[in-house]
Every structure is written in C-alpha cells, then in structure tokens.
Length: 335
Image (cartoon, rainbow, N blue to C red):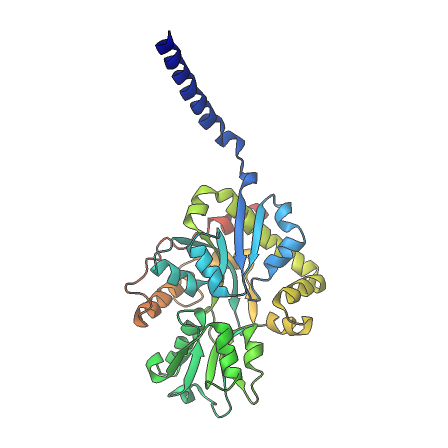
C-alpha cells in the first residue's frame, strides 16, 4: 500500500505542475509587461518626459518605466546589458553597439539634427581647412566623433590630420570652455556650455549635413520579438505626444526645459536645431536611398567609419537593424 500511495502522490504532483504551467501564462497579459525606456539630454528625446507627465503612456495602455540618464553613454551601456528594453540613441551609436555584439532594432526615427550638433572652435579658426593640426575633442566612437569625421572629409582632411582628444561629451565641452583644446564636437545642450568660452564660435553644424545625425527609439531584439504589441503602443504614444506638444506648446516646452535643466528661452533656441520626424517622414527615412537621409545608406557610411577608425574590427551586419513595421502600422491606423 505504501508503494502504491507513493506512486499516486507522485502522479498527482506531476499533474499539479502541468496544471500550474499550463495556467500560468494565461494569467500574464500584455498589460502586465513593463517597458524600461531610457533617455538622456537631447532635444529630440525630451518629449518622452511630456508623455510621462501628461499620462500619454497610460492612454495607450502601456506601462512604461521611464529612466533618465545624466550620462548618455550610461544609457547605451544599460541597453547593451539589457537592463533597459529600449533606449533613445543615435544611428551611429546603435551601429557601434551592434558591432560589439549587441542585438538591437531601430523602430522609430525621433528626429534629425539640423544644427544642434556643432563644431565649436576658438578665435582664429575660421574655415574647415583651419582645423588641420588643431587639438579637437569629442567622445570617441560617438555621433560627435562621426560628425567630426564628416566635417574633416568635406575639407579634404581626415582624423589623422588633427590631434584628437577623446573625452566624454560633458567633459569635452568643459575642456574647450576652459581653453584646453582648440575645438570641440558636441551636441545640445552641451553646446551652451562650450560657447561660454570667450570669442568662441560655431564653425559648422549638422544643418550643413542633412541626415548625418539621426536619433532613434531602439529596442533589444528580444523585446521586439516577445512583446511586439508593447512596442507598437510605445510608438503610437510617441506620435500622440508630438500631437500634444503641437497643441500645448507653452506647457510642453516648460516640461522639457525643466528636464533639460535650462531656461525656457534657452530650450526654444534648440528647437530650430532639431527636426522632429512625423509618421510619414519616418516611413520615408527607412527606405533605401543614395544619401544620408536614407537610413540604409547612412548605416553603411557609419559602418565604414567604425572600421576605418579601428572602433570595429569588421563591417557590422546592419541587414536586420531596421524594422519599420510599427511606424507603417501607425500610419495605416491613422489613415
């Protein structure tokens, strides 16, 4: 009897486990999934703060844990380590992460920089050709580094023609302001700090290089494959936020300026230097093309830069980097 009872107990135990396993996932709905979304100091990303404060994520029935990073680099590292599900970052930095083994997907174009990425120089440097032999700072491997390479290329120069000083973006701006380097490649709002140096000026900016600096919502591939509905809801919330900002500009700018730790007047100056993309512009950007306004073309240009500078050993595989299904779905629903 004891043997039979033991066998019966074992059978009942296995059945209970099977029941628990079969019932468990049915109790987990998409509404229970939390999207860990990171962002940092860039005008094209501050709308996320508006989305949070005005309840736009809740409106779209998506639970978002919005995480602010004082250091942009820290936010990228968090996504690489999958401590975040999504992050706001540039095309350049995303491809750099992919080259290092990360599996990430660009699902949305937040904006293109149209002046907020700048080469700021000291007095006496007046042309791009004058950069030759000068000491220039930027964050190594970052979009500022890439932008500096494009500027030098236009002048017929390379990174070997300057003394490159690799510094984190905030430190690069501070070093220039303190007179430690001749010029710096930085983005807003760090441009404000750099320009505090007496007689300094903007030599050129991303306004002169359309499509060179694009900014995106980037997810881990794991999250996209496991929770596509949540990705769609975040994308929908983004476009809804842009609509809210357009309808409530003063309130929205106040929210974004506070997060940027600048005055409303200062923040408004950044507006002309960042072109926020609408849904139709998103769809167009994902298409193949022959200049930097096409993401596939730009990706090849960035990949070549990473190899040339030794930041990547081999050409990164960007064949699966872009996924435009979510912006296309939004457009279809809107129509």
